[in-house]
Image 1 (cartoon, helix red, strand yellow):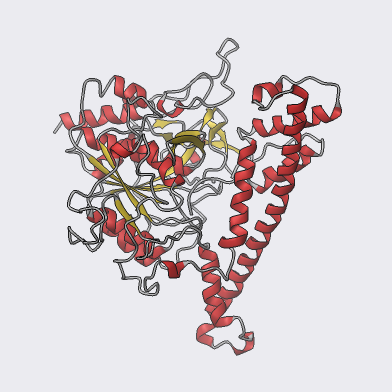
Image 2 (cartoon, helix red, strand yellow; image 1 turned 180 degrees about the horizontal axis):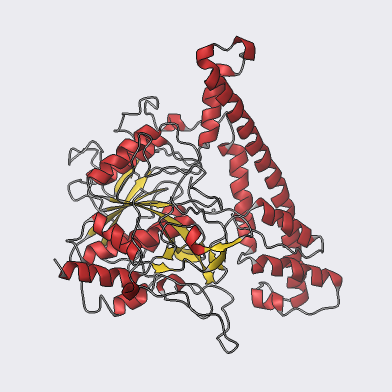
Length: 567
């Protein structure tokens, strides 16, 4: 499942209370082992001192490029890539071209800010229906699509893995009386009952949330209409809403409702997006009768099958993958759009993530495809709670690890501790051991201070390696457009982009070197008290990841420079 956070049920409930006229008193939560040594003092900076009375005011909204900066007044740290280019990389050109595989929903290959950075398979002639390079994938000019069919059709919507497990077990046990279950099937029968309860609860909750968000959306729209009429305007801005002063109760209530919305760094369109997401959950993700897999045409039971899919590396809904790709490597210093983190990269699109849960077979094959076609870094901004064929994914991860490929994975957006809850794919193998060239990334917020950890981000003192900016990230979307998204999906490509930038300028460094450098030079905030994602408890930031730090581009590049010079 694409790792972009939804609004939380708590937020919707509190919004409905707000719309009824009572201001909520609670701050809601927004829902989408190799250990690094302690960061060296010469490479890092500590959290700034407490705010002073004459400090510049905090911005009302994150600047579009905040993640390229050290920080903006009274806010959290970015990667400081701008300073990295102006100092460490000044007057230097990349020494190598780095391939970054984006395993995701697809890429807009014609985007004005991405087309020049798109990976091209030079050994494949486009659209001739021939596997020119003999790799088993016909016309894979810019990547491959493992959720497409040979007739050109594509899977867009899919079920959650929980739903698929429920359907599989239901076929065996739905009509079986408990007393009739054979002893050797007792464990599976009990698992079926557990999965059934969980599935039914999740589906019921999705339906309930959909009803609630529809009510909330009506209330918000009514508030928008009231204030537009009051202000005699066709559009509203947060500052205009804040400036409203009226003795009328309906106007004050409308202002209160929208102000509460803006206080969460959200816009009314976010509520519409959440409604659409919930509608998809009800219609597709939690629908046991929905099965789009025949579109692909593979033998789904054969998990060793590798040659299936089609060459449509864009797909029907490449919004998520396009946003991720722009963070990594949108063309720098051009006259349009944004600057990506890295220059000297080529972005390879490997489509395996639908609107729903990705399937283990597709994830494994996407990893193998990326490795076999020269990927140096694999970005994986997706995840799920169940992995029934984890052994297949483990084998692919082991293969990538053995080939020296760096894998970067988003930690997820449930505000959960992944030390104690499942989040797949994972660097930890079922048979023991773990991938050595893997970075698990949580999301930090532009707001800093107590809100340094993004409120939706998963965390884990053991299983999350580091944090990176993932809140209000402005990047590319299809149709030569740009928008802000939140999620660990946005944090992971920050790290992938930094890794690619290091590799492009210091090609003698291995993936292991690059991983170590990124983690050891991340800026420490270990003792900074923050609000723990998922609840309101105040905890040290150091309890949320192994490093207790946020990635730092100049420090990482300086260390890479030192490491290379010492060889």
